[in-house]
Image (cartoon, rainbow, N blue to C red):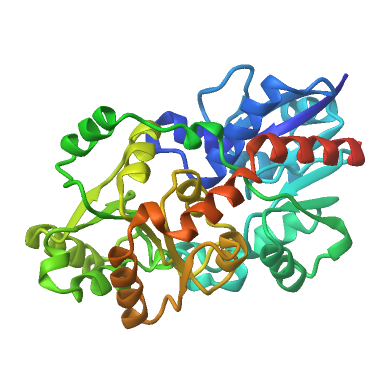
Length: 371
């Protein structure tokens, strides 16, 4: 049986306590599907961390040490592991430096090159150039939207016929209705009223939270005081002005900020909210859109980057830089009964067409093509 080295560093970090991010979730869902239905390959997870967090995970000391040793051909232990595999699937920017083993790189977006302003200042110069150089060494690239594919062609100068688009999926658990009692327990835990607007995502400039808070604050008093904006996401960017805006909203009772929720709590919130506002400035995909669709929750999202593609005509689209437009979309959404909103039915059907099982099967098919 052929062996696939599967990069799991960001999943490892998330399970270590920092919280699982988008790439970590991607890895977790693929590994779960591989465990259910994969008879063609032996999957060997590897991470550049100190302690293994998932079964049978091979752990190396650090990526920096790997890269330096790799440049000087000193990676004895690492090379032995990788040379015994038929393919390396690098799921993140930590691409192994190995000879004579084909590499499949998952590239969700090219933000480091196309939108460097969305990176922390310390990461804007050297890291994107190194990542571009290493990614171009990949034999094939897998990405998650047609939008990202075109960005990869442009900013990585990578041939389009060596890029496969495999969309992300929605797990079946998001379609399962959660009882009112369980949902009420979660709302009570976070002191959330029965009616609220939900937004999900790490708090950083790219997520456009400042404009969303301003748009919500401009709602009539009779609405914004009774229907708060519930913000779910960890603070990822040192932005004193945005933190002040969040805290002011919390003090006024317009906003509720929850740093972290479990998967079950997130699903309870998605099934309880009046709408999801996902008005990001830039996304390679935008998985919360699909998760909201599966939860029968109407969505407001952006006209920019991949979001119209993922929304598939089942969201209210707004210019994310226009606060008035976001405000009007919020008012319209709150004036429409969620149960009779036609976007809910079409969004649910679209989410049904995308699954992690399908994502895994297409990825396995790509492994077969490349080995």
